[in-house]
Image (cartoon, rainbow, N blue to C red; front, side, top):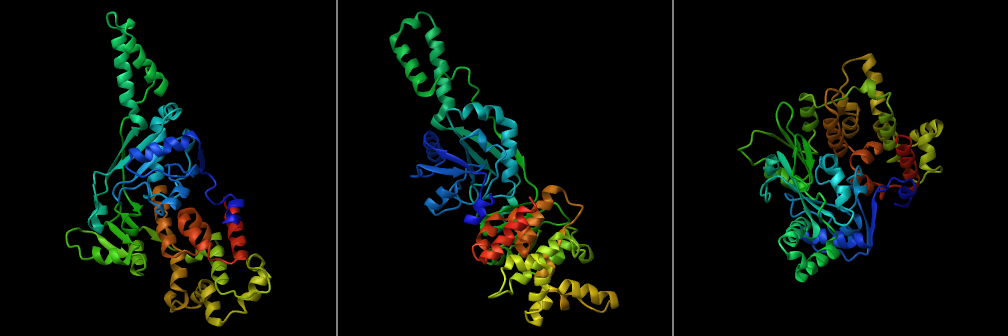
Length: 411
């Protein structure tokens, strides 16, 4: 990952946590019912998730009590606007934006000497069946401060009232209690520590529950797409819910998404886009072995591209150039079928969210499409960084250089 880090493409916006902040973070973990970290320093993202702690605990979802009970931690106002690098839901970033938009001023004050634990409550205690994800509707976002600071404030105010009553101002015991409270927690009298619960409504989304599920419910008919074959097979046994159920690898899914006006594919338009150029180059790179030139150079040089294209076998050549070959044949006759000429996965990768969709839905559908056919390295980086990092580890060093260049040229 060193090349990605040098290019600021690997978790570059994480916030460093050390010293006193580690103690506060551990108090949050305990408050939420998790074990403390033994690390003396680590990094966190916008929701309070740490890749180092995830590695320490060997659990990427260490801030969850099961799939139905995710949590977050706010330890610093610097988390405002930061990415959520491993979101459990596709709407996690929007929820955190809602939190900071509503309570930003109070968060600035509270995190001077405390930290905030967040419960994302969907009113679901536990999932039992894959289609329980249909219960997702509204999320109640509630907050707890470490050291039970709200109650400490109430106790402190009560002590002050007692101190001011009658002749209690000469009571040394009350003096002692006030001083101990002030030394431990500071003067809380004029602090606004009240973070009222927030409400967040969900529509279509992705969740990591049940090994990854897309719920598309704002269209003609609700569609549930499973990444896990096991949970898909379990879900299709359901006879209660009126929904369409697919596994992500089913070719029929693309046709259904097209019928529901969720995606579209205009090959004549796409063939002239940078998306297509990246996908075509990605395809050729998969067939290049023991090259005389660096793969990055081959993909960036038109002459070398054609040279190596002609060196691979005819079947591979047709796979790389299938779209252009199909469009050429189509100019002569309508008798040709796309499935006979264009590789299915390549064809799927050229689909786009329908132009009528909102920006939120477009992002979700981009993520679904890149999971169906992960051939555009830029879109993979944008919409599924976790999968991008996994794929990146398997690539040739020179191909990695081309990927990094492709991403940096578009951000």
